[in-house]
Length: 400
Image (cartoon, rainbow, N blue to C red; front, top):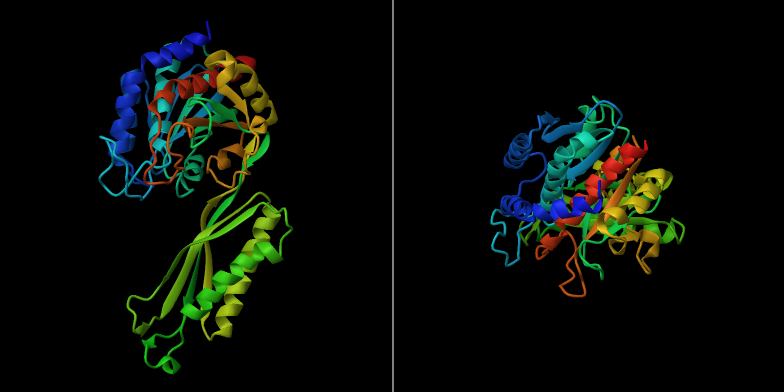
């Protein structure tokens, strides 16, 4: 088979993919509450000749190929964010949610790949499993699908995923192959709840103000990285929410801090979590309050297998053109990526590789990052993502 044919076939279904993506973009859903999104995916897969199945709370799984070889998994996430969209797109969301991380594009590209894989099913040396995942934004969807058997029946041997990457000074449709080993940090959502005693603003001596210890806890958390960790420690401890009170003349009963912790080292991850808890407890006590620190959902570091990274770098040029394939180490000045992806759970079970797909060239468009309400992505990237999905799966199965 002419491998460049895959890209041409992907380009031939561009209009279908654009229509699908816009339908998803205009009707975003979040977390596990993806009733319309999952139904759309199920309907489209069924129309292609698949027999899709639900997996876990809101996931969808389908397979294509045969039992003559191993199984390769392709992942696309489906959920949006609780962000009010501020673009001027004709198909912008109006429901207070937004596909500001490109999951509408991820879902669409995996559906496009499903269409081409079905067409070339007889050429597959094994099985491709399609994983349409919910709740990536809250770091719970992959673990839920794994717990409900997504890596079994048939057993998955390796896998890959694509994430859009806007705001880079490179041609849209370029694919960056992640480096071997760790390429994204772990992530832990946390909240610290401080309890004091409410009272009237005119009589602070009759109350126990929780805002004062909360403010000091906020400052103390920032000292962990500067005073307790090595200078080159790859960590990011962020307070993204600080809440207390509802009016100006009342001392509130409670205060809360919420945020994320990201690291590249499991020992350091636990060290920081222990210190966060100790600091919150003791600072709260110093101000006659109590503190409860809770670590909520999260994920480990994302790991890329050396062999599958080598495979990707060698075969992708044949499918999308050498000029479109970029190694992470070949990008000068690229900062360490402290973002997280719950596909990391899959990467700790089987060898995987992550691709970043350039989707909004900063040289010609506003360089908004993911999660920004004004983010606009270039739909011309679809064929390159589809060809990368199909090529990676077919070549891995052929060589394994």
